[in-house]
Image 1 (cartoon, one colour):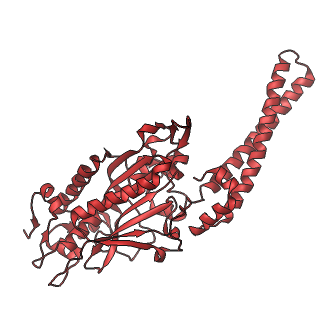
Image 2 (tube, rainbow, N blue to C red):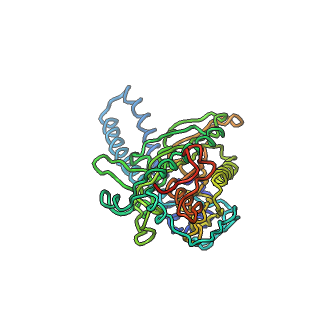
Image 3 (tube, rainbow, N blue to C red):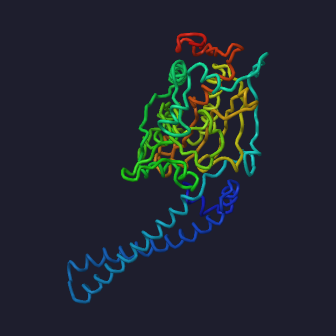
Length: 421
């Protein structure tokens, strides 16, 4: 949620930021209209309550019919105004929740992903002297992935990981934890079901496309998370950090769930785009002055993990129109997939500034100013397990159809190569 004072004091700046994310800037004017009405009604309500307090003191001395009638009139008017204020507050918040986080000034302008900026390519793409196979062909031949039986059990866009694929998954988990705990990250296994208030506060129910992505259990009023970020952020709702506690960093492993609405016909084969997947996610509650630095740090960690696996990748800076609702700035990492002959996204990291913290009411106490400010939040992928396994299989395939295990994972998997049984 945006700072209401920012909207009031700099409406044109806010409109510009909203429009750059392909959202309707007229929402800003609509918010201001309801906000002005709300403020006037609040002022009137407070004046009536002050009158009521003064009258109550008079009534303690004189309970005349005139005074009692006046008290009843005040009571009725206060009840009416309270209802009006409540309505206007709901409308004001409803509109505010439709306003996206504003892009940071340095984010490249652009309407869609075609304007995203490739910052660098890292690693040498493998050169094969044989016909490259796609990951699913290799995985099925080696009995690592079974999507046919998963379809029988669960439907399309599910898969069983088997044998060394399972060892690769938990090897990736251990590698990420070993690297990140040394950087001060606190390991977590968070809940994967969260309530509406917290999902809404994280900014994942504001847009129609977001609501279509989530799984919702109406009877229990609970949502399945699509990323660990959604359950890490609310951990510290309504809490106040000491300034010295920041940054507070977490690394979480969880299973994630997405409907993949609107993506029918795309990547339906295999496990590239599925309804259920496992992920290691990084999350930080940090000082507002340090969130850009923290964001760059998260990107450096993602790159370090990819470099440990020796998988070729590129770093992409996301433009304003492709940022999404909550992010003020975002980088993606895309791994090279030989059979696709292209890069595909495996990581992202976003600076969300105070957008989520305002809704969650998470602050820190400043030593310098002896007051409280909202923290900033930064999130980032350590490993999207399924997609990382895909990248390993494709880049480490051999002429014989076996898979070399990346050196960084050999200790965890307990072997150097995945061979035929």
